[in-house]
Length: 218
Image (cartoon, rainbow, N blue to C red; front, side, top):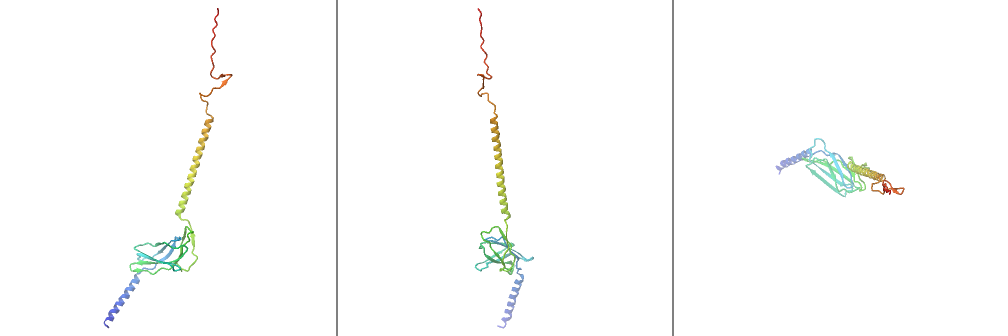
């Protein structure tokens, strides 16, 4: 039994060294975690990785602040620094933390970030939430129309304006043509087949030659 003690001590020491080595090779926790593009049922989480860290994936812990729901998202073999959260409840507070996944394990969790989803009646809003304690209140939410939607609205308005201008132009052309045709009909000369005018009981331009009378003297 006494002979086994040195062997067990060596194994325990080796195990502790492996744990320490693994901890030393784990990547650092993500920084600058933020939440953007808030909607009633979705949001986008983004973060940065400290320079020089070998990261092959990420893990996100998402939970409602009231503790009724918790979700864990894990993605490897990716260099992405953002993730879209779906199927969120409207007007609800959430807490998220992000971990980096390296070749030798996962990093410590980042600082907790609090955000609140919008109501369905709110549209076109974007939010940037800084790192902080989940008890922080009064998030600064600013509204703005997205560039793509503004372009669509502007294009539709320009198309309607062009259609109205073209219609007015065609209407003016048709109106001018009708006016010209009406004037021509008023000044149209009489045809040669028109009814001749009478003058002094006779027809103008139609003079009859009187008959010759022969007088015979006896």
